[in-house]
Amino acid sequence: MRKIKIGLLGFGTVGQAVHELLLENAKYIAERTGFLPVVEKIFVRYVKKKRRVAVDPKLLTTDPNEILENEDIRIVCELMGGVHPTEELILTALEKGKAVVTANKALLAERGEKIFSLVNEKKLYLGFEASVGGGIPIIKTMKEALIGNKIKRIVGIVNGTTNYILTQMSENGMDFSQALRLAQKKGFAEADPSLDLKGIDSAHKISLLASLAFNFFIPFNKVYVEGIDKVELLDLEFARQFGYVVKLLALAKEKKGKHEIMVYPALIPEKHILTSVRFNYNAFYIEGDFVGNMLLYGLGAGGAPTASAVVSDIVEAIEHLTTGKKSLINYPKFDEKRLESIRPIEECEFRYYFRFQAVDKPGVLSKISGILGKHGISIASVVQIGRQKGRGTVPIVMLTHETKEGLVVKALDEISQLDVVQGEVKKIRIFEE
Image: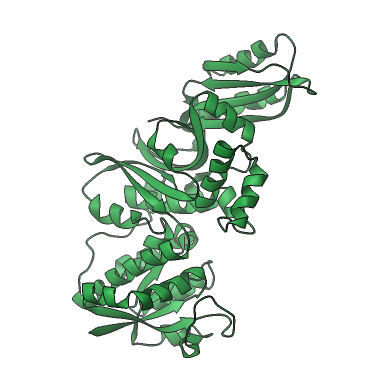
């Protein structure tokens, strides 16, 4: 049985799960591949730190060069996160001809141009399955199973934290803060959950998926991002009355020769398959020109599911290193000209849900409707609730026909200046097939 030596950069939740998986399932991996992946060295910041997984202290080092300069280590798994010094360590490993496996979506989405360019130039191996879907094999599906398709659209629920929060709000009537506290208690949300709540985590993921789908590198800063931090329980309740469920969506689609890449909370028709994706589960809804619509579903985060994806890439890297098999598929290339095809959010068209908190007096609805009409925004339906006890205002909820985002922004800004409208005007886009 031939051994392949691996170096781990980072030994947190995912790193420990990878080490655990390689030890526990070594027999199965060896039987299936003919190779035995063995962890040779692990880079950590603190050797004596208490860890969940028992590990031979001789494997630990505080010097990453013990991995990078070791010619016997052929695969480097970057599991430490962050941008610096992670980027430099990955580039060094690649320059030395090592295969690299990473779970670092932020690094690839924000600074992937240089890394992808080097991998393409030298025909190296870079595996990043774990960076997007955790245990869901979305990258391999895009690179292999769907390679013959023109991808028309990807719609994903790609963040377990926000999906858990929205599920608790929608199904159990919790307000946002209650649902967040419960998510943190159960380990589904970080102590500082801002990257999840503001949609940044989802944007990193759709950046990479869109790059694969459309065959050019789409950096994170080209993704429109809006999180769920301003979504209120009242909006979820109104959405249900209209037959919708609110989810945080990550979308990439081609429309009329332009690309739309974005993350935002959306009203989804309650009969759509994505509404069945609940709590901390993730899903990717993909439309190809020949395959049609398909759904990949599973746990998108956590040590064990992510470790499964990392080891899948390790095995693929072994094949690359030992057989000389090179992928025919290039990694996404940076193309300034093609970036011009990304449609600005102001030019994108949606149907909308609006909620206004208005003074309960005659003529208010006509004022709001008049401003919307002036900007060419057509109303599809309206719900006006009677005065709530102890409040002098009433919620007015509208659904619109499709219109441009830029027109909506101007209209809502004007409406918010009315003395009969109080508080923030709520706007949520509506997702439709």
